[in-house]
Image (cartoon, rainbow, N blue to C red; front, side, top):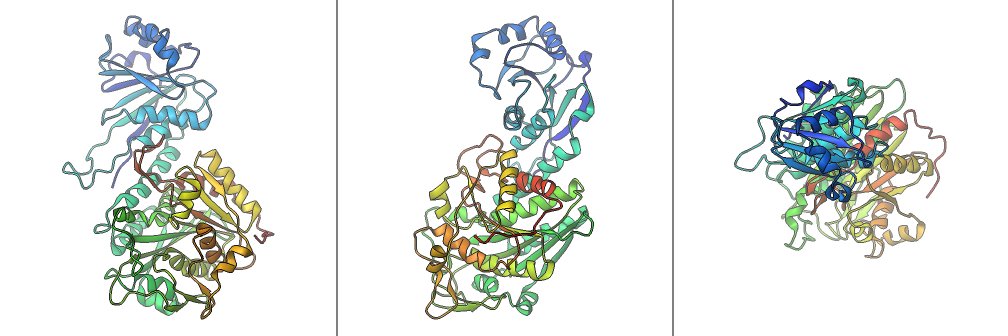
Length: 495
């Protein structure tokens, strides 16, 4: 598993700057005014820093980005990185500046001189999140030693070291899970890694196929019956609050999705190792909450299956009974995620009576067509609950856009031989998938469905991550837990 860089926070010692090894990064505001550490750097480098700050190159440097001065005279460090950041920078820009530092670490210890920057914690988080590389299956293997990023500040409490590290650990856990190949992250291995969260104080329960059969989770089991890997549901409880009902997070954990009998095209099927992205996010959130000892009650439930074609696999035309008792006509076996989620969602409500429920899934390609890779699709039956999430996502700069629900879309799920079909037409595919899930939300339960197919893993680097798994959602949901505890769920608006 990938370990974030070690974050260390110290009071600024001007005399120690000259002897710092590895790299030194200094934050310079857009107006070029130097802090005391920057002035010391300038003297040590015989005016080189001032010449750069006064140059056209610094003027053209975009806020939140950086430039290196290699092998600077007067320093033991091999590089001096100049980071351009306004003193009043917002969270997004501060993290971007931190990412410029993290992206240049290259396994080198780094001393960061932030000066009077107001958002030092955000700079630190950006640095840790960007310094991610999944190398478990490369010849060199995972890193045995990680670099230390030392932030020199006026007062050490300017940076919430434990909180920043907890967020980075949760995001890295999600990224690692999403990045793993399916021959490594089997259903059994996934459950084992979640069981390890018990060491952090999370109550973890693994339900095997016999238990799921007894509970009536037939649609979930139907998805996995063509695989040799046993289907499982993992229940993770963080009990950091008082007597309030928990917030329930439900994740789709399809460790590999061939499409089943409705098999996918070969091109791009290798990407289906990330089809457990929703379960990965839930897992990362639970780890972060435990690490920071969040004062809240949250339960995370993930349905872990593999969707394979086999003589025992479900077929188009089959009819399956859900845990709720409704029957589903299978039109397309590649619409499997909603079949996993519907049973787990019903179980979450039956067992925990949550104050609110959020499901996450890499559910539809249609959401990528509609929103690209910039935003997750957000569907909800409760305006207050939904607005709270959207606000949390906006604060964390994690793109999210609310999508509609309505009876006309739901009508597409009518079946001649069962209570519903598992898909509608191609039109509005992400919406009809949400309508299917809404049928398994009890009246009075505030609910949000997050279709993260476009944001869980990307082909190009983002501000805070290299290409590949992003960990989208860990930051927003962690913030939502704080923003909404206790949640007011006195009324749920019917969508």
